[in-house]
Image 1 (cartoon, one colour):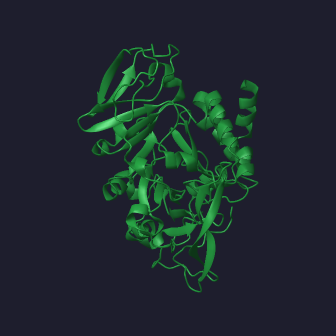
Image 2 (cartoon, rainbow, N blue to C red):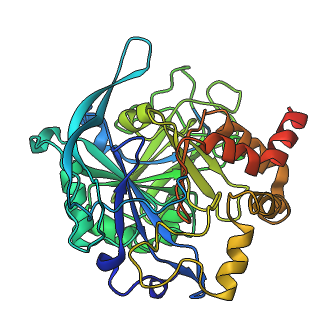
Image 3 (cartoon, one colour):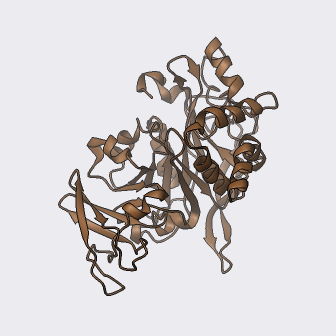
Length: 416
C-alpha cells in the first residue's frame, strides 16, 4: 500500500464510529483505493480495555510460537446534532467463572445524524493518568488530531497492531506519537520497519517453527532459569541489536518444547514464548492466532466480550459504503471497483464468488494450513466482523464467516 492512495486530508472524510454492539470498539473508516483504481476503503479499529493493572505494560519484545451488517453506512460520531446521553457498557471485569460483567460509561447516541468534519470524541469519564484504561489500535490509518482526541478520551494507547504485511504504512506515525506502545505484527514485520527496530515488539512466529526455534527457559529479567536442572546449548542471533535466543533442537525436557525464554542485547530485548501471549491484560480480553498460509501473513484477534473478530485482509465486505460515507466519491464508481466488488462482498449474489476467490486464489499455496487456521477461528463463537475493507457486520458475523469459508471448514474436518 502507498500513502498516495489515501485522501490528502483524511480528517475531512474519516468516519469515527462505535459499534452498535459495543461502544468500547470504535472504528476509524476512510476512503482507500487499491492501485489508485479499486475502491476498497480502509479501516483502523480502536478498542478500550477494562481497567487492569498495567505492571506488565513495559514487557520486552516478544516472538510468539503457538496459540493459547449493517448494510447502511455507520453513523459518524461527528454527527452530534440532537445527541442525548445514553448509558452503555464500558469496562469489563472477570467474575469467578471467567466471564465478564460490564460497568457503564456515558456516550452519545444520535437521533438525526448530519455528517460533518468537526467530530467530537466519544465521551468517557476522566480518570487519573496512572489508571487510564489501555487502548489498542488494529491496522492503524492516518493519525489525525481528531483521532488523537478520540484516543485521549478512551484512555492510553499501549498497543499498535499491524495485522498483516500490508497494513503497516502508518505504524511509524503511531509509534512516534506513542513511543511506549508495544508494536504487534507477523514474523518479518519488525525487519521491515527498520526505523522502529528499538521499540517494544511482539512478533508472531509460525507454529511449525517450534522444533527449530524453541525458546530457552528464562526468568522475567532475562537470566536463564532451567526448571529441569539441565543445561541448554543455545546460540544467540543478533537482529538489529535486539538479541534472539535460538536453542539447539535439544531442550531441557528433551521433547523440543521448553519454557519461555529471553536473551538481552544493548538496545533491545526479545522474548519468545510457546503460546501467542502478549500481556496479561491483552490475553484476558482477546483470542488471537497467526495465519501464515494467507499470502499477507494474517493475524486475527477476537474481542471476547463482544465476540468481535478483527481482521485485515482475511475477508472483505464490499462495497465500502461506510468508508466513503463522507467522501465526494461513490464507493461503487469505476469499472475495476465494480468488478472487484462483485467478487468480494457478502451479499447473496457475492458471497459464493468471494468463497471461490478464497479457495482457488488466496489459499492455493497451503490450503490445508489455511483451512486449519480458519477452523480454529470459527470455533471462537464469532458474532461481529470488523475488517479493514468494506462494511462491518454485526450480529450475523458467524454465519457470514462460515458461508465464506465453508469449503475450508469441510476440509479441516476431513483432515482432523
